[in-house]
Amino acid sequence: MSGHNKWSTIKHKKGAADAKKSKLFTKILKEVTIAARMGGGDPSGNPRLRTAVDKARVANVPKDNMERAIKKGTGELDGVTYEEVMYEGYGPGGGALIIEALTDNINRTVAEIRHMLGKHNGNLGKSGTVSWKFDRKGIIELDKSVMDEDAFMELVLELGAEDLKTDDDTNYVVETSVADLFTITEALKEKGFQVETSEIQMIPKTTTKLTGRDAEVAWKLYELLDDHDDVQNVWHDFEIDDEEFENIINR
Image (tube, rainbow, N blue to C red):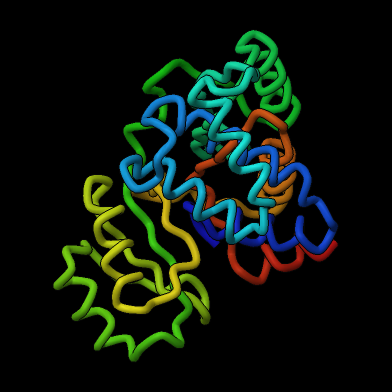
């Protein structure tokens, strides 16, 4: 169980089962608002907004809510002004953490995140502390049933993808450059493929193996950060053996 988005996938499935849709909706709509503010309210001309809208649709966010969020971003409706911030630091066992947030109060958010890290054997660092340990990549996920792996590998490489991997037994993970993410996503959709997710992620270059108490505390810290209202993404280089991880999340 390593880095990028597998923990997030598990957490969101667990959240859906626990009926935590409201918090997920809020986070998605924040991203819709800031994407519209930065690049305009037309998804066809704003790749970041298109990605956010697609994520909202997959999560079944009501259309009216999406439209209001876009109008708040473009200034057609009054709304809270969010700022993008990124925090870097370390968690249990020296594992690296990057925390991306959208907040209307930076002082509050940084204080709360620093407190969470301090209580879970971690600490907040300066900008650049751990970001060099990650590569920023475009990640597209599709169900493995779409095509035979060898044939799909050939297809996505022809479209300009950098790599094809599998994330457990059910999903293909297409890795792209950030610049090519939108183009390749749209090309796959035009060919009739159902894209489950398409987003920019921070992929760890290496991983920090955690066991025992460090592994348990790392998962608890991840849950708390992911549940924080201002936190949009939590990237880490933690690696936990699959069997040990299953035991932790099922306790």
